[in-house]
Image (cartoon, rainbow, N blue to C red):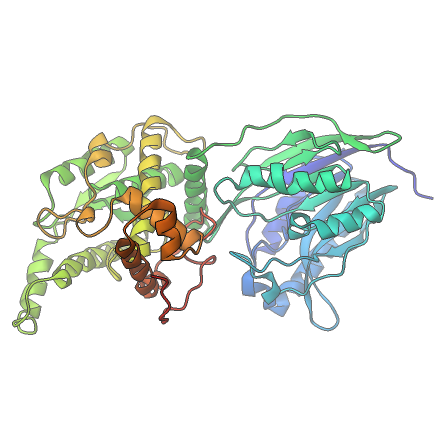
Length: 556
């Protein structure tokens, strides 16, 4: 006979992960449990034992074998009478199929496992590539309480939660690996999971992780909703937190006592935090001692330097000015001012000797050709080679600094300013870059390891953007104003709109939009070779948007 509990203490462990380092993940979960010995149940995020997303790493048979062994060890440790644990892991069946699971560990054993039913296969997700779908899950009866355990996507769609409610579930616990996107925090709470509560009348726990993983970053923003739809808890964004929640069962239902309601960051602070945390975890987990980047005196490199100093500390940021004969005195002064305001190292390495050497080397081959963009690109590639030499010699990772607007239309030099290991601005349009720079000059981010503000001269923000590869050059010589360009690109990229759709909404010249669509298409080969960068939007260049390099379709 199982005694029925009428009170519960449940701990939500909003934590980071180490993909593939199963022992470290297990030890981190043990540490949480040790801190909450009086709790009834501790919850951990989706696939916390192996890390998420594991991608094809999970196809290695040794990973599933090791995960099963560690899960058994964790289960055995619950024989001490302490809290039960709900652990996300992977399971391989007798036929070799892999499943994304949660396992409930209590009393020294695995008392139940449930397999993820809805496998997302859109945007950043391709779980159907590596996992098999589980059946509609049964409830789990634990200490007399009927739990429904929808795993991430199971809660984003109505079917699984309705099924669990029909089976008599009393409490829905949804563990997630939900990456950050702009405005996604409120959508999770107010739209998606509020709808599951309204449909079922059941209280619901939403638990998410934090931290960067390659191009993804997880923002936390976990919460608890009572059955009447009211919010009982909101955990902080971007930071690890272990939230103790207390539950009481009356004659009708379970209810969570109201706790702290965290205020989540608004735009653009949340975008900046995404950039800080993703870069920090990428650099530190790949064991780089710091970063090096070219500081041109322009807004993109200035913002990247500020982000890097916020992520790592200014002592781990090495900026290099690489002036040519086209570099203005204003840019030299702005770069120097920016480095001083951030507090990072700045070296100057003129590229004129290398440019002259390349001119001499290529003079015979180029003898019957006019000077054109080729010579401009040589300058950019000389800078890339120089920065990579510093990276190789001293160890810091090279940051690239191009924004999404430039990468969309191919205004970047492959093997030049595209060279590097990571790009914080990869998914940030130019107007977003301006907004972030202005915001950072007036604010010190909560996650920052550099408490200085402002971090760049105002002239960097106000002057016309230029690559400074020829006399009097500006970006707007050959592009629409960035306000217009970004609106075109948002529709063409995020909304997959046609040229006519863009014209109908904004009234732009049709030929101008058709040209931007063409530039977007022919730059695909460059983007395919670009370094990774943090996902911010619904359609980043990388996991979200997978276009053929060679194709002839145009809408304009």
